[in-house]
Image 1: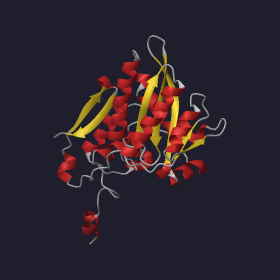
Image 2: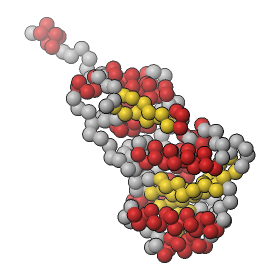
Image 3: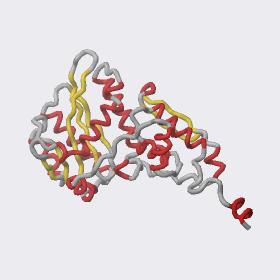
Image 4: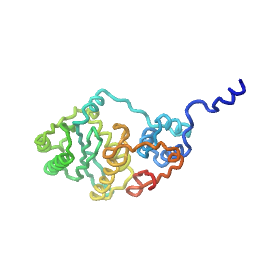
Length: 273
């Protein structure tokens, strides 16, 4: 009886080992994208239909000597923003510099609920008429998308004229100003600006305004259509997560292809057709 019990005892107690092809894919994603932490890699796997635990990704990266990105704790204000996300927009200007030394201001708007980003334009001179026209374009786009936004958070920046607020209020969107020296009140927008700089602008040589707009449009499509977002359970603003792969044959024989955007600055991973 003891001999039979010893032979029947599983050699590896606990959960089964992660499939080798999945482990290799995790390490490949970490190698090709040095700025991705284990949660970002976990999100990319879900986009590919590979369902696994985030802790499993952490363990595999840790065993390979790859440190995870630091975890971020939520705040009371962030919890409030999440609870009101369906009705919230946020916008901001941020500056970038071309190779010739020209300084360009970019105006962008993000939806809190879906994390969808809209690039409203880039200019060297954000005059009042230019900013007001950008607001009108935003209102028309929101109406076409049947958006239920009722509030827009923005900083107390002199680039925003009174006409900007008036255009939005006429459309039923109330402008909420962030507090003085309180960037966390517009944290979702600030986080996107950091993402845009880290994943695009800091890795791209911008020649002129037209080149900047082209790069921003590519990043907008990538951000809205492919990149997973932790704030919305690793879904994408314009596409939900696919059904997870459950067939062992599918998982064991992964054929993942990479598509490069902007000459390889951005990477998209998809199953081979």
